[in-house]
Every structure is written in C-alpha cells, then in structure tokens.
Amino acid sequence: MILQAALLLAGLSLASGSICCAPRQFNAFQHVTYVNSSTTLRALYFIVYDAVNERFLVSGDRSNNKFVGTTKVIYDYRNGLAYSIDALARTCSKYSLQGQFEDQQSVCVPSDAVSLGPFFYGYNRNRLNSQSYTYNSTTADGRRQNVVTTVTESDCVPVVVTRTTTGGGEGNSLYIVGYNDFYPGIRDITVFDIPPYC
Image (cartoon, rainbow, N blue to C red):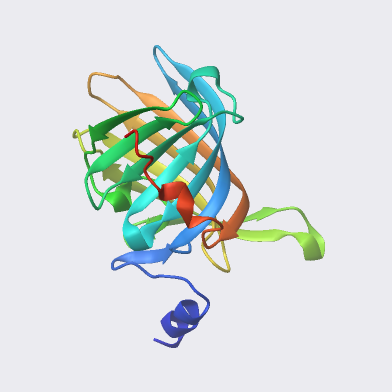
C-alpha cells in the first residue's frame, strides 16, 4: 500500500491489474520498425499520449518514412474515432477505431507479465536501471501477440517495446518501438484540436 501511494504521489498511475504504467500523459519520440511478409517500415514519430482522455496523437510523414512532415493522426478512443490530418494540404479523413485504448501503445505492464529480469543501459553511476517483461495478448481482430517490454525501474517509462503478432490475413508481423526524449505531461494540449475542415 505504501509503494502504491508513493507511485501515485510521483505522478504515476497504476492501472487496475498492472505491475506498473507510464505516466498518464507524456510526449516522446518513437523510432518504429514494422515488418511483415509484404511490408517494411522504419520511421521516427512524435507521440503525445493522453490516458486521462483516452487518446493519443502520432505525427510524422508516414508515406515517406520521415519525421518532418505535416501529417498527424489523432486516435480518440473515448469517441471511437481517428482523424488523419494533413495541415498543409488541409485534408482530413475520419474513420472508426477498434479495440480498447489500453491495448494500443503497450505502456502498462499487465499483472500477468513474466519478469525477464533487470536490464541496464550505460554503466556506473550513469546507468539506466530497467526491467524487462513478457506477456501475451490478443488483438482486436483475434490475432495472438507476444509482447516484450523494457521499462525504467524507477517510474515505468517505456524504453523498448517489441510485439510479435501471428495469424490473420496480414500474416505474422514484428513491431518494435524504441522511445527517446520522453517528457511527462503534455506540452501543448492544442495538438488534439480537430481542425474545422474535418
């Protein structure tokens, strides 16, 4: 009980049934690698994560695998909608979302995760103490996933998340996300504003 109270005072949220969770709101860069039998994608994205309002934003030029771009996608799970927005072209497409918000970014380590033990980046006093875990999950369309996640030991900030998905029409896939420049809180809440042309 004392540990939970200390974590909450530190601005962290322990979701029901979780070993630990990242802060409920954060900004970060994600280096993403996605591979299946027909596609390979490598990209650097900027993410704004808002668990308080069950939404997140991913920004970057997905079509050219560049971060610098004018596109962003807002995933609003509370309302079940996503908006793909190109501010330069002033275009917007809207579509329905499947699944649950909590399952999308793998930023909580569920209570049934198995510890893979400690993991360290760097050395001596400057090392980053981390913990690695593995667990299984099911996608919204019924495919099986094995997730391996490494989070900081002190505050559960994600470092690397790997999801191996099997089955379904897309075949098997591997999705790896490395986080950097992690910042708790949301620097600019207006990034979630939907433009009038949507």
